[in-house]
Amino acid sequence: MNGKLVVPEAKQAMENLKNEVAKSVGVTLKQGYNGDLTSRQAGSIGGEMVKRMIQDYENGRK
Image: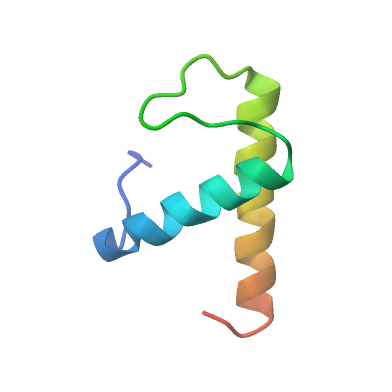
């Protein structure tokens, strides 16, 4: 995958989810580039985002 959203209109929703998840796992994100995050921090955010998206799908909130 090339990192592009399949549905470009979902960009803001993905940003909101990322910020919500980051806060819930205790990671502070800056506006814009966050290249100073550790692999563990970035992975915890991405992993939790995927987990939540799968749960939403399985619960019928597509």
